[in-house]
Length: 90
Image (cartoon, rainbow, N blue to C red; front, side, top):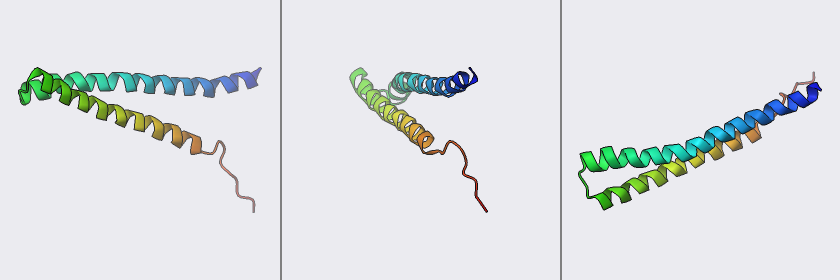
């Protein structure tokens, strides 16, 4: 019975990590689009609506690639860690 609980905990932690990164990948590019459009390109640079939307979309795509890269780096880093440290036999 305890073995079943022990197997569920790492699965739940993996699920939580995946959900966090999914929300991060969805929310951060959308927020970066609107923040860059409203604050940077409309208010500061005073671009036309179409131009500011295009530049904001480029910013959102770049941010999306960065967030996906972070997810891949995290997933690759976790798979490379050994589960138990190796003991040196003297």
